[in-house]
Image (cartoon, rainbow, N blue to C red; front, side, top):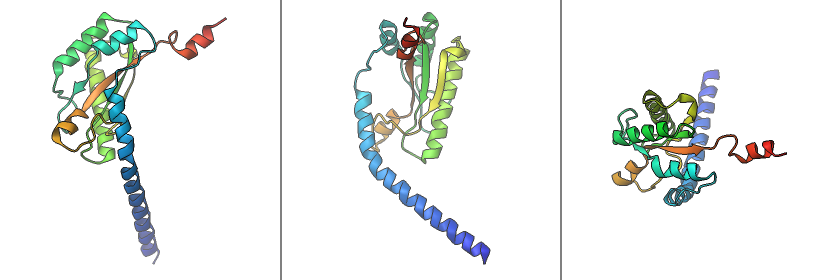
Length: 179
């Protein structure tokens, strides 16, 4: 009898979570449109020429479907590593992404593997590990394209880099050093 009640309670919880997930999927399309237009805009430079040069010279690393350690454009990774070695004061964030195929949890894991792999690839090419502030997988969140065509889905399988300001560049850092 207890097991029957527990089974019914578990089934009701799963049905409730499923309903919430479906509501989230319906509202996420509007959020996706925001991110599509966000990525289409040029990057805003807040911290000067070094940041502008970073966004001009660092390029996204693209991946095939369901893969994290075999980029489609390995020469871009080589170029990114060389640029970072030529600019030893630049710090960065590594952000991995995945297409909308598969579950949210699966895509979060895959995108994290992509971010970690790119971080280690940069380190193995001579970029100091302490310059990489963080490597994070965002899954299918923040898409470049929301259509379900193969061309569109492939645009979301990538790793991006973001400039990380030094403590002296950040607003908090400037406020602390002010007399």
